[in-house]
Image (cartoon, rainbow, N blue to C red; front, side):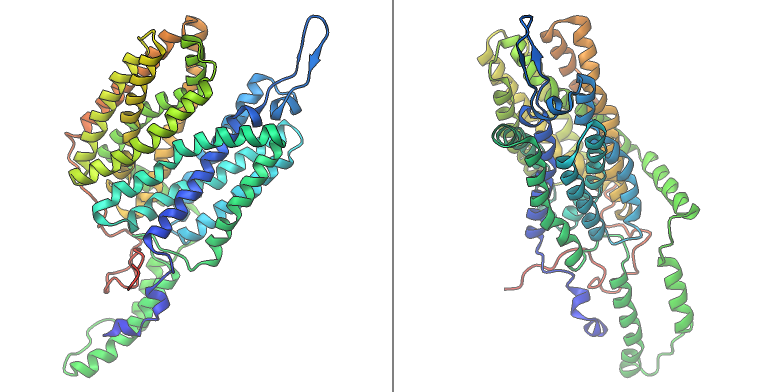
Length: 503
């Protein structure tokens, strides 16, 4: 066979097995969210110094105390990374058509590592703000490309479960970040929290450059081009030996290669590249299934974002929880782990399809909203915790299915952009505006119970939007050829799937 002449390195892109890849991406995702939780913790974020009427003053702590930040400036720090994330995500997703995606992840993690180190060396408000924006830039490459990599390499019967395992790291990382930031900030110094994060991320950043690159489904790469050339050169010889009476009616080899490279060549970012980006965006926005999925995700994230920021304060004021941070952190990590995993495994059990994903999203969100809404009516703290925990367990079951739809409703070459735009949308229309808007509502209403009930009620429209998705005509495009994909010779050179271990 001609394919036997292809170098083994082209057929075996990496020593990674699918499970090793999943573990590595989970650890990276965990570190990303540990960083978010750490900067929100009291140990790192700190507080302003105070003075009593008698003239006794206490010095501030953490970032806020050292740089003497007002609450507005302090609030900017918690969301500054969003600027870099939102700007860079579509850029990295578009570059995936030109540059090997695995290398882009390495670049992004390198920026993340340097930016996090810079946070530890910051000397004023503006220096740490710029570093936090760069942290978002670094994270952008990873969030756009990690999920497509995982979806490529997951077993067919466990795709949603693998995505659920990956997204389980979000609530887990947040909760660990609260604890980690508190311990380091209290016992050492808030700067050490960032330096330790950078040290832990550095090996993964280096890995993105030194390992043989992996390939995403639907994208051509230099290595696969070379492998294809070798096969095309060898193929005529095989044909002449086995069937000498068959004439080659194809174009001259030189012209054939010229046409092939002209199609696959990735030009520098110019007007044509921008035109392609606009074309891809139009394709996404014209996909009703994708749009409905993201709209429901925005409404869902509006509630979850405000919960993560205001939840402890609401619990403290409604139920007089002295350790509200610990209680809400514990509920989040337990329900986040079990709920996210359950959602993925249940969808795989139902058979992973887009309509089934919408059904699971709408049902779990609807009943989760009922439990969370009912929880805030109770005056007993124990009844509240019981109902709220069940509600969060159901609500977190959405993570696997919602991202499964984002990945499978578009063709392979659009998946990085699909994930990037989904992430941008849920932040712009979800958790970024929700916290200040809930704050405005609370200032006007001055009743945390009513504010929490109004916020929770938004989960019902989210469930309704996802329910609409069950009636839309949907096509799973996972196996469609991407516009950048090489012609299918035998799959050994172009397949993005990792080779399983041979025993």
